Image (cartoon, rainbow over all chains, first blue to last red; front, side):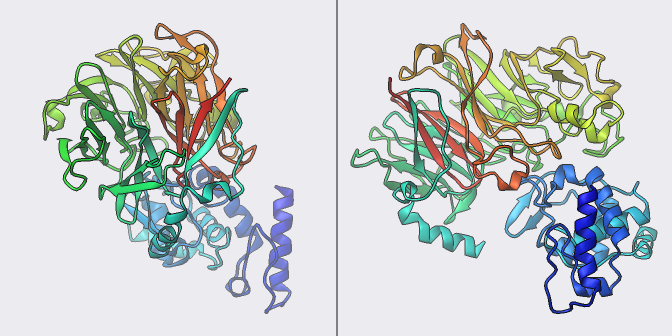
Length: 151
Length: 414
């Protein structure tokens, strides 16, 4: 864990240090410069990883690649890197409709995770949107709160 | 998808020839056995069948060039199956040959194709429908098949559920008693092969309490049905106060049963624990990891480590392998995912020595190395995942892979 946080720190620190044109080198968390500008915090990423390990990793796997035919990948998909509100809704409500990603279907339903706090959901989604090769910026507690209120 | 199809198109002419040229994962086998790649890069090859003339049939769960069944034939008898016939515009898992017909399944329908005296498909574009309208709610929807001697086909109808909770896969949601799923799924149904266009109600629920009996085969030595069942997921994730991470990876057992008409294997109320050798009450039904349950449910012949996913069963009645293999069971383990973050397990073919329908010794790994790595820390990195088994007319066995679509032939020469 310590090592992971260190990697995270280095990778994001590199972004903060203003090396705007260089690619982030950390393999664990590829936080991009633009997302750093949007306020990607080390704390949110490390808290997000804790939530991920507890509630998401079993199905979506440690590398975010999911399980063929069963549990969808979280890498390179518009479900993760696209609309924030849709992504927040998936965590709040679960997902049992057929889902197709890059031509593949995934068949296991996902449970609703509305028992997580707004902050936990913001953290884990920030982690997912900025890990496994994703670079899509953070999600705030406010954004989750707003979405939950619509339920 | 388009890109994928193009890739396959380009590759098709090379399919069996190119196999020898690429670096392949070494398959580890007992002394005297050897393996040969007979098909490669067919994508999601699920179950397979080999006809009396040596033709290999593969059921695909992702269409390749619009087709879901591929037949490979060695026309010039040089040991390479160079001739390809593709048909069937549906995906699925089950395939089998029985009394002059090739049977194949989608996730809702059992089809069959008549074979002529040359073992050619009479009408590849117009299969007959044997059974239709079977439950397909996507989860555990694969329809495996096998046949007895008396003209019946057996179809696995997996439960579209983890453990029959009120809300499937929702932590804290209670289990349902009775479990309504068991009326139309969660068991093996028997149908006649003498009738066409049957519905579920035309069949008999032969056995129940089976979450997903993906491996089924008839044991001709004792004239009984045998099955391997995928156990439930998420004991650790749902009940960390009862199961630690390691226990959650090892439990529940994956199971191997002898199944008689009317048997109940206990799902969802109990699971098998191969450490305690007991049927343990599922925590969703009041269990605590120790309490037993379902006294009327049968016990398995073997309990394997958890989550390895026994996708295929082959009761070996061939004559090529040494005597110890006769009437024993080969089981193809697809490889786990629900062991994360523990290393994944499975990705091999296991052998259970048997006589008179009962195990005579401990199970052993028969064919290993399909994943191309050890340990498998990330499932996505595994090179191949064993999914189907079949025996050829010469007594060699075949193993299929649904990761990239390989088939290996395993032979024995003293």
